[in-house]
Image (tube, rainbow, N blue to C red; front, side, top):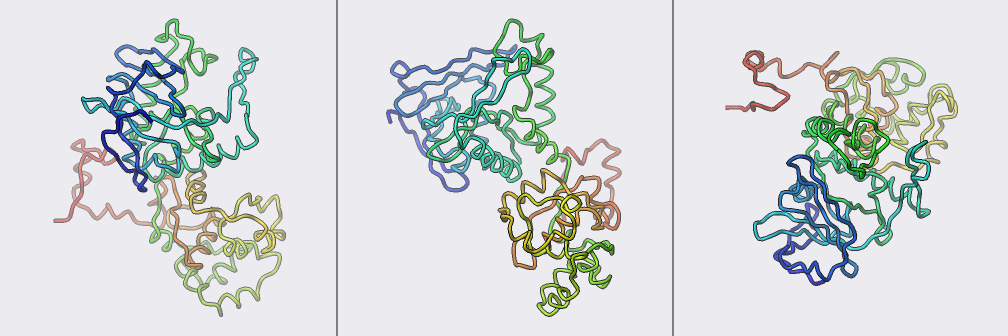
Length: 411
């Protein structure tokens, strides 16, 4: 590898990568694979990709619009070897500006078939039998990293998902931003990268759009995920344990023990006792077993809706036939489909709630549910901010809580 290593850095999980000197790169001996000469007003979008042996080198100008996003992606924990297993290192120049990165060669999984683009748009073509498997695995990881790091990759999509040594990886790595910047970046995109401003350009990703040069987010389902994340708030373990159970029927009477159990906390404590479990099991029939079986099954993949499947068919054997979800998959699913708990009252989302109760009884870690922010302090839950003096006065003075323009501390 003919790159001059200046020093090394580590990802947040301990991967070691190189930092290579831009001025020592021998571009004349490299094969140029792709070059994009692109400016939007004062914004520099120029970048070039080279290949040398098994390595790919992507570089950009000093004032490249996204030059700082790659270091941010590693510093935030968004990138590491679980996302880009073929990453070798970053490239910096003598002015300490990030000028690109080096990766090992990887294999393409998808291409665009644009044969009928004028009529039906681009069509996704899978190049390997594992294309969908690798993309789905990467998508789950990307969403988990988005939750954990509070950053997102606006350019993530099927076409940028590749394979390296039997594992999924990504290309076009720059373009990772804080989720707090999402709304501003989206507004900037649609105000700047328009058909009108594009002039004679013909390299847009979505040429069928009559108004915009490209979409802001390359993957619509990922965009919906980020919007869910921004519109909801995680509820912690204490909040969940204090939630009141609806004293309904249809199997809920087993969980609340005929209205004897009031809260999630009481349910966890009660059913942690084997004697109480056996007593509950003695009351089970095919008319009331669905929530009980769901509780002990915890979170499973591909569970059918109980209305379609039929309550009597939501058996222990049925749940046992389904694969367990991983913690990462549960974390992602709870943002993909936020629960509609009403404040501190557990009425809707009962199946997921009892699945989490089952996890807690079995000694596993609580994974946060996500609720619409406006719903968190509705109903039976009191907002603790009401006991802090002068917050309303700060609102009147123009200091916005949502923008974090001030901090509350204990003196």
